[in-house]
Image 1 (cartoon, one colour):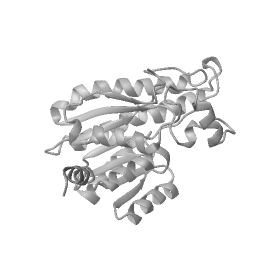
Image 2 (cartoon, one colour):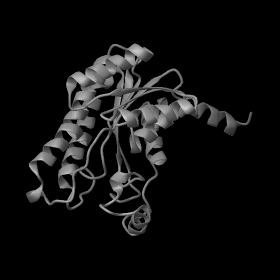
Image 3 (tube, rainbow, N blue to C red):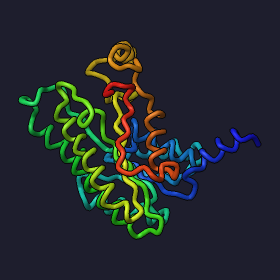
Image 4 (tube, one colour):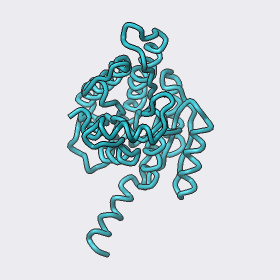
Length: 264
């Protein structure tokens, strides 16, 4: 076995024997992250509000030879998150990695015209949902000898750049970035590493404008970022897996921007 082959083999088993929880795991970035963790040996729990899509993710993981569990949960409800973590530990014995990915985008209106309902929905899911998830995850990880790793999914919008018509969303994601840094300092002493990934436009339906095709998006992105394209879901997932792995053992409170240079 060559050194390169050995390194590749090791990379594929970075999470063997560990359990990874991904909220918002039924589609898009969440599904890509769940598949990536499973491909590297993790037992994967996917959570969200839509049972059908969660089961589709589990099916894809199992077809590839992995092990996964779907749990229906609303991240804006603390009781749902407590039950989610409980189900994870009951099935797999521990919670080693948590990715707080569930989020919603309500955009298209300037701040003065942003509907209060949309504002409150984004706050409930994007901010309170991450807070409540952190609380449930930290509570469990503090009981484990090896602690754990948490990655919050923020955005390049908010703490890093702004986009007219999406300021409300940016506010909620800036809060996630701030929450990540504060919590990281509070819990590293318990062996819990907390970091964030802030994607820009990625290859998901969220980055499509109303009525826009993927081809039209590709044309728009040629001039929208220095990279000239959206990030693939696999590229974003790779960043998440790095922050969740032992390879980033000294990375604490980081906010890794994956946006093709849009916020540079």
